[in-house]
Image (spheres, one colour):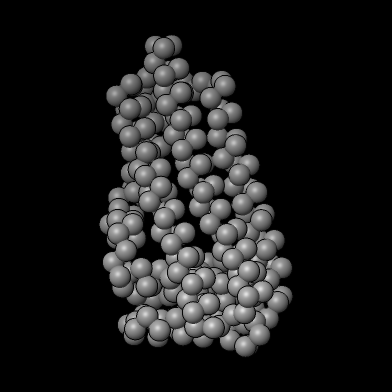
Length: 229
């Protein structure tokens, strides 16, 4: 039913890149989480200052549990910062807060890639889960049609990750620009924040690489299964 071969090695580079990206992000985040910002502003205060500058008054800023769980919720218009970043005045906290505020600005300006990601997120989650199930069932039943449908469904996550890249890079670009424009950080602090945000962006590159390589593995496995039937 299940075949093991060279195709099982395909996802390894993506897995290694993901490990490296997480290691780099957590290392830089921890390093600059111990470095206070010169003005003593917390992540929540910096996010609020950026929203105010952008004329955004309908987005709440709330703390959330966990570490690096920060996110912008466009559906409910809430910018959520993990507890350490919400209350901390570290450079890491400020960088993350500014990045999430960048997403709120994208939402206000109807940034096309963000709008596209918002419109497909639900369908993508469903298609990805269904794709893996259909693919495995296709292997079990030796059904080429189900294998093909499973592959097409799983490809939704690759498309989603591809759309996510410009969304995340643009949010970081906006964050770095607005921090400098408002004068919330000096040059050295800006460089530190650039490193943290760059490491965060690498995790999204790794996510795309991992999804793409898994898709290629599925295609190779499906071809091998069909050739054996």
